Length: 158
Image (cartoon, rainbow, N blue to C red; front, side, top):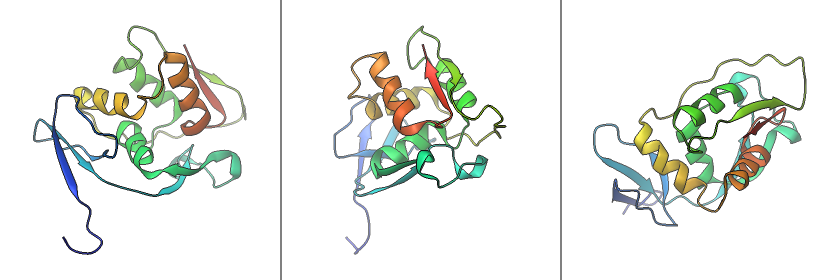
């Protein structure tokens, strides 16, 4: 293997995942999810810069694990909070429960629309389950989304 290259692990698309693997790229032409071993950490802009987010402290999830950072963008691209809520509801990530957006910060904010990540719903459900596998309940998963990943001026509620 060449220096700097990343080892690939391709798993059957049956929801099987291994802890050290992360979803880096979803292959659209096969019934597989391609996983890469990625280590390290970086900063996640909770409101993406491409839709008006800044690098101010309250908008950053500092030292986010790269694995989960990449997964977040596979799931939600650079969507704004309303688009994220729509995706969660459309893909039924919380079963039949509906997610709503509640504004808690700057009331004058105008949100641009962001770009979508992957659009294959079946594959996305497995990525969502992998990313939030530590959250045992809907509330725990929402708390993680609200406090680490989501635009700090909003929260998602059941």
